[in-house]
Image 1 (cartoon, rainbow, N blue to C red):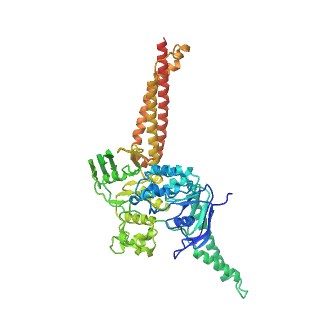
Image 2: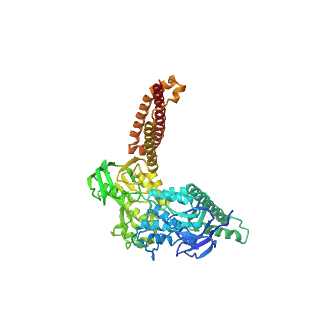
Image 3: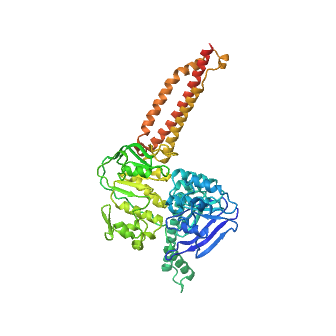
Length: 609
């Protein structure tokens, strides 16, 4: 086994109260691809900062190989002293590093390098910081939430880039699909200590459940052992003048371990408050358009949203997802066309910029709108402290200003407020940002089981696949031109349908090319053949009917799959139809090519005659 280039052992750190880190560790070897997982507030970012040398632990051993280089992705990069993004990114290079790497990375991250760092948005600042830390290709690359504010094409590019890098990786991310594709080892930080699984994130959740089940069993056994020892103390051998002091000491130790055991941090317990049922037709958009500075964002788009639909909007940054969303719910007027909203709509909105948060507000004031210390949830009066506990906030945080919360805690707080408000139309703009995996699971269950209508914008592929019934995406994702298409199913289903459409276009293009290339030549085949065989004549006569039948079968299945409700009602049937459609298209392509070859051969023979 290769020696580690970074090792943390028995790391301890406390900010008062329950220790944040109570014996945590981390070991990194060359080529490692480690994802660091755990609940919000479990100390993941702190442990990573200790590894990067930015925070000192109170105790424990830290070893960094003297010759190794480490780069850490800052959440709030410092651009002081840099006039352009290019200069900021190049400042992270060491002597001998390739400066072209900066240009390459900035280009793929959607930046020119000429931007003024003082005017960057949060997402642009994150991308600039990514370019700075990735350009030197350090021995260890530490990335804390690298996919936040990145669009799907950039996330998929980043996955490939990280898989190719020579750097060892330590990653923190809420994006399941990203972790599954990049990681080969998992470190779980839980209740201040760490456990390592030498397999990627795809195996983590089943392993975690096994660990917690074994822990619960051990705790149960310990409780039974304490009961037996207490029984012995009371009713055991009485002839002895003294109790067995050693055994009594062991009992005290067991009692201490049993009482001091902290189970895993509780899961969020919440249920959305639903208003009265809306009308069947929730939104009707007719030929709506929107342009900015001559560029089409939405071009003649029409759709109907029915009660119970769960629609996901995807696309690259700048494609117009939020603009389209705001037009659909009436917050933004289209340049032309009309949008009609249905009856009895109660809308709850989660904004990606978290603009609804006043940093000076306390948690209690924010959740109750300043109306005392109770709020109405599902028709029931709840004390704000008890309701906060459902979302893993401690009672002592009731007077905590929002500005003191982490990003994940702020996201949880906004979810708590939205779920308390009665609604039948949920609007979620990047709802998964900063949420830990367990809270993501809860949000997934809420969206999937919501009786109303949901429209959401997300770059989280796994979340989309698990929740939405249809997906809206630009018709041309590489160069958005304002055209949008609705696909049945989630993100993966959209990719499958797009691939089928692309294959069909390629097939038609090949067919057209074959026809244009088919020029009369000397019938060499005719030298050996004077006429078609019986089998060839039969195929030439019957293939048109078979092709027509295949085209009808394809059209019938495409019509069925165009129903957005099909995926929700019958996902198995949807997948079966998709496979049948793919097979029919392959058969049709084969028959067309066979018919074309036979027709050309017939013309050659007749011309030779």
